[in-house]
Image (cartoon, rainbow, N blue to C red):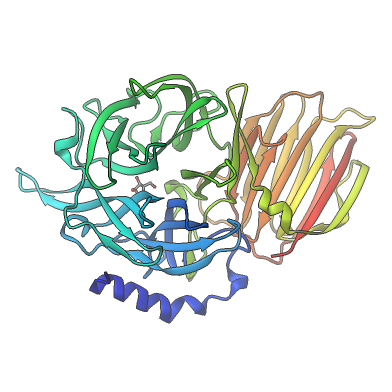
Length: 492
Ligand code: FRU
């Protein structure tokens, strides 16, 4: 049903979205149709197509009253925009339709479960946003909010949990056709927890258990949970606020995955390990789906809240998702690789085999800002301490990947990518020691770089708002390095 607010958003899209030339968008990463995007929502399959909704404020490139934007795809790389799906037009969500998820129901409808935010007067006279969970069902284009919303509110929370922070339901269908969902809330100690809920029909929901809690150990509030089986283990994926750096895990906003075991009979999750999902700068609010051929595929917001102010002046779009990644678990660690659909777009191949690199060198045909490049680095005759790959480079700009084999550090540095802001521009991670050898697959897409280290053992993701004219790629080492580089043009 189209409310006034939804009609207005759709009319605004119809009027303005087409004004953005394709060349001003990334070529294979999803951006909002117009305006602002944060978290991907409702990442799911419906009637044979992938649907991706997103936290959306069409009118400006800043966060505002949250709508849900909507796009569909058959390969997760080419997206067709559909009109905005939800607007904050009901009493219980008039301060925002926050993040949530989607699933195909057995009766053919698509079910959306999302957080409704409304501002409520408190006993002390102050105003606070209160969060509840709401559903809407539709046909893949138009959605009807359920008349009995909200379907989960403070009465469903265990004692001591916060109704002010109660959000981001991720739902899935159980083998018996019923539904489960995880959502987050804040506990009495001020930090987050993940709660499990169940529904026989998708509309009538009840609390089941607390699956895990932060106990102020990994950040404060947790957001955007996802819970799925992967290669025989159970994974609880989270985005965390106010993380205190620990080991290699950086502080601030971070995305973590908890690996453990799960007993569905008792709904008990036993956490065995906690790791960071992405070692780069811009990765938050991930969400996964299970493809028809059984792949666990993840998307995420290629951004964190810490650096949203740094955007090109007068941009008409802000925010993008990562290139979807296939997930596997190997020796308890997440392996992430670009979805194989990207390989199907491979066009002309440029190959340089076993080139000796010392001084800064460009290799013919390796460059550009839309690329799928793989680089193998092997030690050469002269020992080397540092190898640097410059991307999106010209005389003024560059984003670098530097590998120091003796400390096994890989550093991503976008401080010369064109930003004028004093924000995080550099991150490092320890990669597997392999006697100076390293494999990097690098996806470039106009204003982003995603690095997959050693076939996905680690990833480093960052946006780079570098002028498109800076399109050079060079290689340099302070000893000698043998480089093999393969770059595929992408038929987009
Ligand atoms: C995460 C988040 C979610 C919330 C949404 C609001 O980025 O804060 O917890 O639902 O963004 O836009």
